[in-house]
Image (tube, rainbow, N blue to C red; front, top):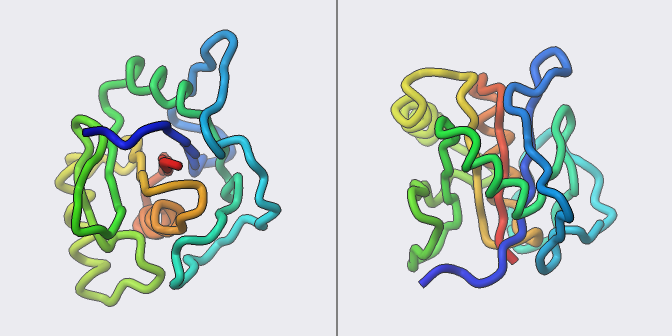
Length: 166
C-alpha cells in the first residue's frame, strides 16, 4: 500500500546557477498536505542530526522546491531520474521504482558508510554525476532526505532532489 498524500521538495543543486533538469509546472498546480508550509527554517549547508522528525527548510542553497504534481510531471518527462527512499524504518512502503537506502540520511556518515553511499549512487547512476537523484523521506518534518541531498552534493552530484511525504 502506498503512503497516502504526497509532499515533495525537490532540491536541485545547480552547477553554475543552471539546473540540469527542467522542472515542468502543470497548469493549475495544487499542493498536498504540508508541502507548501514555510516552517521558517533557514537552509542548511550541513546535515542535521537526531531527532530527524523536525521541520525542514523550504529550500537548499543552489536549489529549489517543487510540489508533488511537479515531481510527477518530471518523472513523466525524464526517465533518467533515480528515486531513492532514505527513510530509516523497519517497514518499506514507497513509490514504484524507488530504491531503498535506509540510513543514507543520517547526519554523520562514517568513512565506510560514505564510501558505500557513493558506490551505491555510482551503481544507480552509471557513474553519471549529472543524472538527477530524487531523495525521499517521510514528510516535510523529516531531515533524512535533506541530509541525503547534502551527502550527494558532497559526493559531486549536480542534480539532487529531495522528495518527502507528509
